[in-house]
Image 1 (cartoon, rainbow over the protein chains, first blue to last red):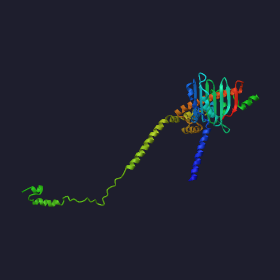
Image 2 (cartoon, rainbow over the protein chains, first blue to last red):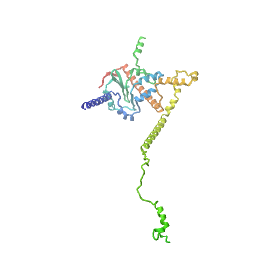
Image 3 (tube, rainbow over the protein chains, first blue to last red):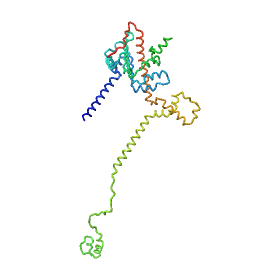
Length: 189
Length: 176
């Protein structure tokens, strides 16, 4: 009787622990703290594509069109894309405290700040990655400018090489990233 | 002669009446308990209530099933329509299969076989109208998100490539 109770207790503890681990591994960033800025913003972009919608959208990308196929391959396996972007008419429409809940999330749960660009002209851009072993399991980009605030969160295994391959296609700006092979070829020439 | 005897048995009795009384008296009502013969058995009254209840239950289930099926078929109507017209879109989806007149003249069985060949190849099942609209919106959102992401990454790349004293770039910082 007692051993059965112990077994149940251990199972319960395992379930609770796994739930906490799963929660900790969740790379989705809660951006609700920024919602109030929409009222002040001149232009707002709010993208919420969860896993179900991602799969649904993936069906519409053609396998025959090379560009669309690249996007399809990129978003395959992703669990969500979330974006909040605000463009303001004037400066000072948001304060650092507005971003604090997001920064607090990026400080924990295995996030790594890959790049932090500080530019007087174009604002600050921070790129965060979350790793699951060797794999990138999440991407977050934080762009703060005097008149702009953008937070991008891609949940799931992000293939940065494939993301780089999208440059200059389907309205996606040129990243100017050269793959190692291409670089080698240009050097040989 | 007095008729009183006939009416209330008073007065002098009439011998003929008395004789008639004796004859008919044997048929007079004699009170005695009813005796039901043993061989006579009354049929048992059956209780039909459980059967009626079961039948009503089955009927209700059939009715409910019918309503559910009809509503389901109504909601799936566009999808069904798409399924009916499946052979034509299959050819559109796979333009590599030439639409030759010979193929048109082939027997019906072979056309069906072509459709069966294509079904497993297409990984995208037909979407209903609602799903397609949702998928279109999702696709648009995905593209907006990717544009924004790559735009920001492009900015980062530009800044990390062209480092100037104004720009401070800090790479590979572990936060937390």
